[in-house]
Amino acid sequence: MVAYREVIRDTVACYGVLRFFMESGAKGCEVIVNGKLRAARAKSMKFKDGYMVSSGQPTKEYTDSAVRHVLLRHGVLGIKVKAMLDWDPKAVDYPEMIPVA
Image (tube, rainbow, N blue to C red; front, top):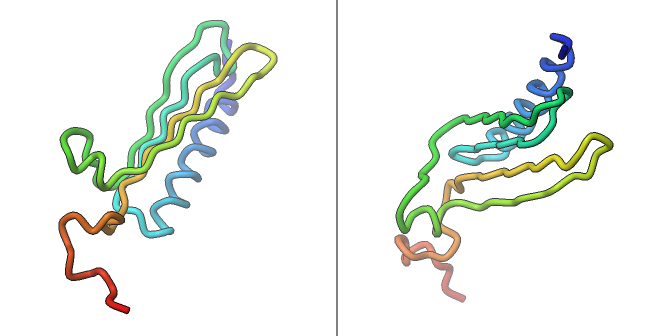
């Protein structure tokens, strides 16, 4: 059986990542952890904060994502992180923001 404090430790780590992203200036963030988290059966935990666009063309322009797989003793743990940027990196919608040299 999973101890209560072990579950809290996992959630505190994920909320720490969310807080770091939001303090860095992101509009929104999402952390998904998949795999065996201190139990025999695998499960998925999803944490969200702020405003996230999850469909359409703005997803390709405004979101940044990363996927990592961690090999642990009990099995593989997958971590997905998505962050919504607060500006347009490719200057698709705001061409006047491009600095002129």
